[in-house]
Image (cartoon, rainbow, N blue to C red):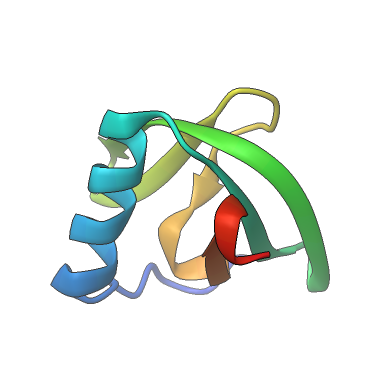
Length: 77
């Protein structure tokens, strides 16, 4: 069973929303089944389902926000 969702900081949530609005690509590092992964993606949206928040990208399945390790904007990579 997956651990209970842990809400992220409002600062990170606002940053993800801002990046989605302007359509920038980011280097996203996150946990998937206990393994750390990194992908270059465009954030499309943030959604809430069953009291959990998810990141929607242009190429990955939804990622639970508490699985995000870091987000680096492409011009900072």
